[in-house]
Image (cartoon, rainbow, N blue to C red; front, side, top):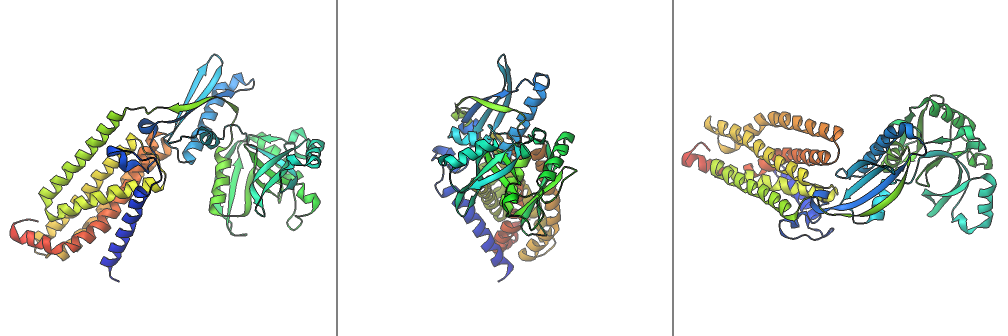
Length: 474
């Protein structure tokens, strides 16, 4: 199979996947110019969303209240961004009754789902596992008496035992000692890495606070179970649990004392399991409890007329550019217009499949990437015209034009992608939304310029040759 057929198959497969993401009914059916966004999650400024207000329980920590509120804000911001809600609005508020956090999440119609996303009620802590069962212990008086005897609680686990939910009897005070309670530790440098020894993936992390490191050393010293000794009744009561939101997120054995706060969690995790555990460690720690004050629906920040006017302005801009390209470049202008439409549907399809939230800044990013697609075609076409002027026929001119312009296109688009990555890393909210659409659009424009446009130009090479012979530079 030659290169031309490969390009055809790849471009058809990609655009079919993108268009199916837009056409397969998944979301609310919109009307008018908004109908193309029916399968795309829309932001607060376009569609509205859920509004949640929480009071921060400072528990007498008045001296460090500002820092604690800032830390709560940071943790919630990371949680929302990690879940893909980069457009969520997060605000701090101070009233006579205390400090508050106001969360507005776009494209969320279920307040309970939004509350679970925030996970605001839980504080992460390490605990000792004393027992486990595969059924609800609250229905068994013996198991509940066991919890009272050990001054422990039964918590449900995220994992299952032979298809049944796992329940663990956990005690926050390791070995019943108050000096071995590690709650809300300062965790940093959480990474997912390949486990070359056991296979799969593992999670590594570090404790940042000296007191946390000292407590963790005591805990790991007390719960060490050497390899090969797991499974006994004694070892089963020395497992370490990571608890968040009243769920046992992880349960496992401690292999050795950890004196420096640098630990790793192994278990032949899949990449998704390891990423979930890393996200819990990285952004699951709240320095204070949150008490829900209210929840409800917030209307779109912008009126429907403003939104439709903005979208229509963008569409008119695209139409004018397409007319100009055809008028100036003829057949090659038609290819540029097809590339423009291809990249637009490709970008919208990625947004739909990726469940990426779109706001007006994101739409601005889409329009900007449309401009880069046209710019890329202009660079290629000018190179092709130079080759045609030198006496080459259409096909050799097209090949030479792409060969001479590829490096230029990569350099120009790479700088824009780097800028987008910087915006995404340092930005938040709508800034990140703009960066996401910009990065996806630039990558799409590179593909469209170098693969789709070349395929179409080579297919239309005879027409380009006839146009040049008939009268012109083209």
